Amino acid sequence: MSSRADSNIPADLKYTANDEWARIEGDVATIGVTDYAQEQLSDIVFVEYVLDEGDKASKGDACAAVESVKAASDVYLPLSGEVIAINEDLADSPELINSDPYGEAWMLKIKISDPSEIEELLDATEYGALSD
Amino acid sequence: MFLPHTEADRQAMLKTIGVERMDDLFKDLPACTTDHPLNLPAPFTEMEALDEIAATADANETVRELTSFLGAGAYNHYIPAAVDAILRRGEFYTAYTPYQPEISQGTLQAIFEFQSLMTALTGMDVSNASHYDGATAVAEAVNMAFHNFRGKRKKMVLSPALHPQYRETVHTYIQGTEIEVLGGDIPLDAGPEALIPLIDDQTALVVVQYPDFFGRIYDYAALGEAVHAAKALFAIHINPIALGLLKPPAEFDADIVTGEGQPLGIPLAFGGPYLGIFTARQKYVRKMAGRIVGETVDTRGQRGYVLTLSTREQHIRREKATSNICSNQGLMALAATVYLSLLGKSGLKRVAELNYHKAHYAAEQIAALPEFGLCFPQTPFFNEFAVRCPLPAAEINARLLEHDILGGFDLGSAYPGMENCLLIAVTEMNSRNEIDHLVEHLAEVSHA
Image (cartoon, rainbow over all chains, first blue to last red; front, side, top):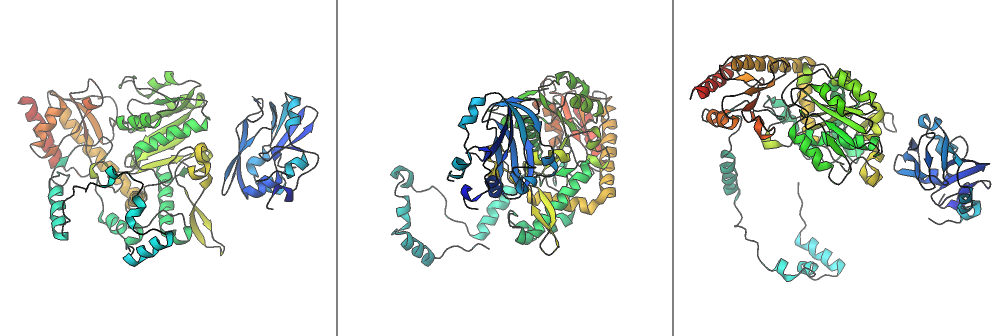
């Protein structure tokens, strides 16, 4: 795909300009990287978390690094909060990010500390309209 | 073969970019930088050049003319003729960086073999393709430890018996960072456990040398335990020849093992090129700097080699990389590979034994001289030992040089208070006669 508009962008999620997605359920946000991101990175070979469960961090803090054969990319928190879960499956199967970026390849869950930040996120249409 | 441009090539290029003459390309430089001629002599003929170089080379005194007992990180070991014969093959000698695996299988395979030999020797899981020398390998261990803790732990404990030049190199590398180095004040005779009180939850790395700078051999198990209890990383810097005899450092639970590979088929060459060895546990492979060669199969299922885990490197990770090193010491790594392949396990063990026994013979004879004594008589050593002398080491070395003997390292130059101490190294290159002459001349010196 050559642009975000050509990628898969589920309507029920929120997005950032750095190609992260967030699924908001009550005060919990599940976070991952988008279909466009995985396509740009190509085959993902390694995921490293830089936050642990229990860490409190702010919107924009690096939470993980994703390595493919040709690039290394940081993943940033779309929202501030406390990390309550980390997807350990990605350590053994980083390729899940390529095959199921919105499902099995969720990266972490946080307890949202500042709900007002949710409005600053992009919706599916806005995300799809982003240019490179 | 170097194929320079012809004048016709140059003219065509100038015409294409719309420039009349070569000099026009430099017209933006101020005249003061371009209008004075360089004060160089006329070119030599090949014969004259050879004379000039030979005369300069003859002014050197090398281990061919002198009997050497100098070690301190670089040793006079025998280099089998096969090493040079293979190194000088054009395919290896002029091969460039193997970024294009399709045309670099020879180089890549050689590096892969080198890596395999380093892990076999040290007992560690992974090795990189080498660093420039032992000093920078130690500095990279510091980098790696700093990145491992994401900058949250800033203390590096370096044993005072780690080579002084390696400690200096670490200080150079950490300039501008928040890294703090500890360990320099620990008394030299206190043993490795003396470093334990310096370790806390801010410690990223503890580094010791094996054998240490004074040639001493210690059991680092207790120290290793203390390092890991604090969840810090443990690095051990080795002499590869010594590993022909000593327990592999992996057994002390090292996380990183670095080394100076010069003893493996590489000449002294006034300080370089030498060879940095860097190995680590599997779990740190993505934090390891430097090139790594991996083994894989091509589209036809044939085994091939390739530079791998490239996203560690700074041309991809940029400021997030562990280090900016993106090179290796290819030809010297090949020398080490040829050397170890020729000797094999039993050959390396034999070399180590010769070193050990000759050094112990020398130490015994010297310690028996009335005014000399070993600085650390209680501690086992490999092929190097520190001797307390009745006169400053510098004076003793001057007298020895009159007899064409290159004496030991003047310890006072690196450790205040040790001006009368010599660090003497004995290798398989020192015959019994040579050792006896050394002892004779040392005896004379003290009576003079």
